Length: 221
Length: 221
DNA sequence: CCAAAAGTGTTGCACCTACACCCATGT
DNA sequence: ACATGGGTGTAGGTGCAACACTTTTGG
Image 1: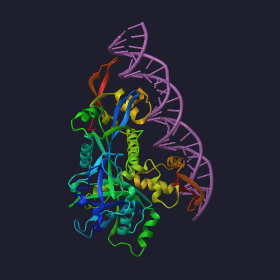
Image 2: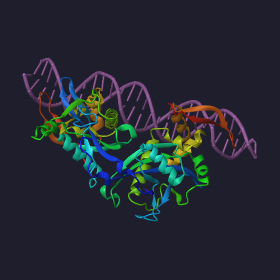
Image 3: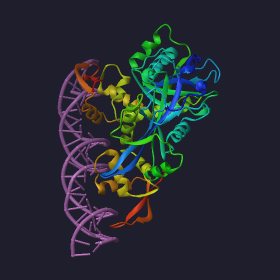
Image 4: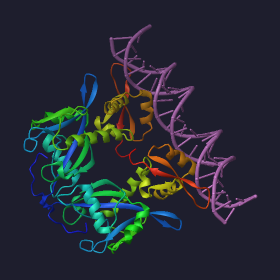
């Protein structure tokens, strides 16, 4: 910041977001993410991450939320900066991408898709089976997935994929979908029960069998 | 990336680096970082992180190295992107800062400072006792320090502060300086001896007492 | 009463910490 | 010889994985 600005008007600043959610499949929930079909060159017709250009009067987080809403009509329940990609050759003309990653509560996916102005050219893909993406977005999505799987190990972030109240089994199934492996129910319970950020409620989910206590994520912890 | 570029020529892209090194003090090594005195408004005369503007034809990592060299004449031995700061009010006119953090081998600090074109307005400060900084650089430096202390816990990154070959005691003293607490020599040894990235050599450092085996950091592991 | 999910208890292993102890060297 | 840092051994504690077991519901 001690050098005067030069000819850097040529650098465009984009903001993109890798947003994950769960969608039910025959063999349990699957981790999915929405992609947008490009309507312009370059890479016209290819799938790309939702995003847009940073507005000069807008914070970075706000830009991520806004461009995500504009392209997919989705509003994230968790949002965190991932990385800034800026290799000179990542796009035909110089553009850096400040990339966010996000989670969307599974109960809001279809609600948000049902609104009348739901974009046409958005489609959900299995996070582990993505098509070829425009620019360096394939590499970016892979990194976001790695970060998500990593962070699930040492935080209660996975609750961001569920409604306000949920059973421990539902939460465990989220972990299993994210991590791609089964977890021991009893050990999982003990691990999360002592976590402060998870508080038990007095409600129970009644189903085919013994009712399960509902828990709530404590955002302020 | 699906929206056309608008008036974002007004957004300037800066790159700054928080670079750490060790400097000896009476009570053991101290973790220090170099700051640059601002020679222009705004915040003229205040201390700031070394940095500069991103060149349109330059990768982000390269920009971090270049601006660091231009302002401090230092070349990092480890460099990693930290975070991109872009709050609208972080500077008088809109500027985002792609911030890197870096380590400098302690044996290179004075060597690099001794070259003839060493900048005048650079000074080293104790990482735990920084002056008030320009812009949001105080918060940034704090975050970089947190990241360094965090990462030291689960990687052998601290070797980036030492010469190619070093004894385990020297490495332990680095950890102690970074973390700010004493570590048990025997447990430290066992922890790092089984780490793959640390390979023993056949050389020994001879001193006042029993010679200590030299180790080398295995970059390819 | 049975099936199945909710929830508890228990045991063993891996790892980390603290600290006692031996080893090799310069003076 | 002895002081000092280099290096090894070991016992206790913590936390997690595995899995046996009890509880509570719907049918």
